Length: 361
Image (cartoon, rainbow, N blue to C red):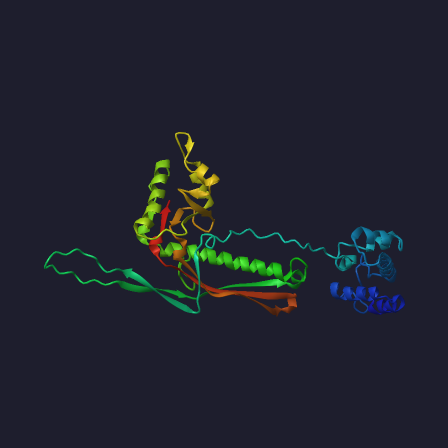
């Protein structure tokens, strides 16, 4: 069927439906509807009869183009050959008019919950760079006898520095998805925020400070407060956990927002520990949500080889130089996609490194 024949049919049919069909044909089957070019025998554009029967079917259907309804309507306007030509599975045939249903529900990507904020770390807003003074030594008190001299002493000071490390998310999103009710901008934006929060959480624990990455908790731990376990027996677990609690307290760090952070697999190992047929930690962990009286947070963002304690998670500074900034860029118009960029800046510092302890297995 030639373009001239199609144009004549459009004049006869008149309805906008026919014009939409012609436009769809040009887009979906380039080269097959050109002047004097032949089409495939099975296509609805192969002949005036095929195209006319198909068009009448669509008009009769009132544009409710489900697969079953469209085929039933086509049966009233053509013979078996015409009905066969109406192929809903081919995009350059009737399939071009069958709408694809897009659910408003999005199945979320599985990612760990942000654990640092659950632990009660201290958030600190800053711009560019923030210096905080810290006392590293004290003056000395001494009893003296008559005629004795007192050695001079003075408090010592240093500083900790927060510097803005920039993290980014860059993604190309289909405009069809963005325009879908219930998915759209809100869902995409929430996914990117969750991705950025997950990246911050991971860096807060595991950042190694290489390149543009910030340093996390495990790099900044006081070496004297990170120790190897003495074993995996019940007695060894008990002794190591007691030591992890003892280290910050004997370093004179005030008790505040105390809690453990632990990998789920390591938590399971604790709950399975038995002595004389009795579970040592299971009851406390399940009933009270505590280990040795202190709450715990489980996350896969910490290594399975560690159990970490702090007598005050407020000694962890979670610095945010800039809240998450989302921006849209139409840089992929030829793909009908929008590029979305997210930027966040932050850094992490331990205000009192001795407030933390960690057992390694």
